[in-house]
Length: 197
Image (cartoon, rainbow, N blue to C red; front, side, top):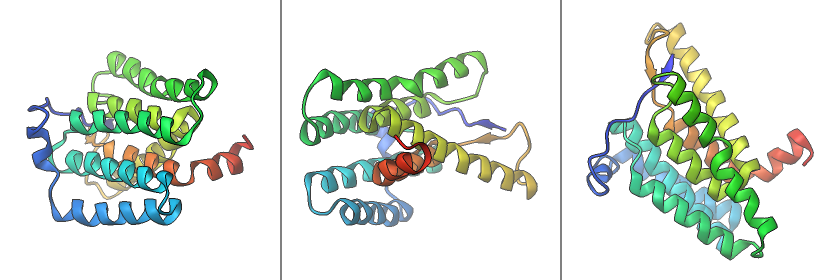
């Protein structure tokens, strides 16, 4: 089973047309509530809610149209920079984990996609770069592990139910978005529990 290659972008604004749907509104409400519930009405809570909202937009666009909109990816990257300046003291030592986060998963995904046709779509790679910039390398690794774990479970479910074959395509942006969202809310706790970092 390989990942579904993202369709070619129709343009910044046209890509957004696949987002509005009942599924988006329901998941967006849950995302905003979760961000504010975990982070409170603080800068962290508000920024987390916006991050989760953008992840929901990426997931829904991929489910509906097979596109991860470039504008949403750009907004996630900008939000990552804003989050850094608002929630952390500005120095090279605090910026480095975010810069590493932008490449620690996305670059290996790009290399794999170049070596194995259809392994990952461009939107998935850009999503992980922007998500890594927002979360930092530890959060990005936690997010990709969670996302790929659930994508694997879903792939196994499809195979067992004979709804897909080994050469079927699987859209993974929703799973990556889920993993990044869980990491944004609970990544520090998970990192301490699993790795003791």
